[in-house]
Image (cartoon, rainbow, N blue to C red; front, side):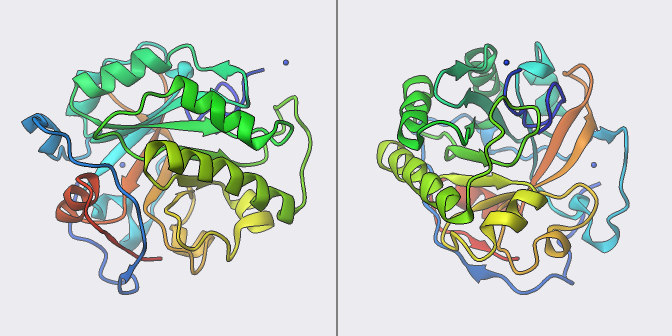
Length: 280
């Protein structure tokens, strides 16, 4: 999520679908809180579109290719500009995580337009918050809650935790303080939305702070050069951000590509509020 990049954007300035890879370890249960089913959900939300994205910098993941997983999606922020959500959906975006807030006082100016557009096109949508280490955790939670609607059928909220050299906040708290602040933020969101937040992170931040932590939380992992099992050994994960250089009809420039860790049935079960099996 680098600055002004088509990634899960950091702070403001101051890839044919086949069968799952059977070489991966067997699945284990993970405790997740998922969004409730929404009455009258449109049929297009239930349809899984095959990934038709291209990649400006393709990586050969071999047998662990994300193309072996069925349910792909994107994440967007203001840096993608005006998104044609219908076209993006037809290219294989089944879900979208949408940048909402930074810290305690910034709202992505495209959030509400993207939030509504993704829903109208039939994507499952969720919102994410870029966490600032120089702001009080409870204030950041309040700011997110103020700006992100609580709606049936939305994906769980996401806390984006990483080090970012472009931020005006250069502070790097201790692991103990990082975990404490994250817990305060996530607890407040879980109480409000009734969903356990998803943790998004990158390799360096994970190495410094998150190994062995938050075992009962769903993780969304950035791993653009190797499979998550190589980059985050032993960590169960639910979403994998496998590219920061995706190309698709419906969006100008590059866009982050993501995939859900499961088959179509598991996706439908989780997205409709039933328990999921997840693995590392």
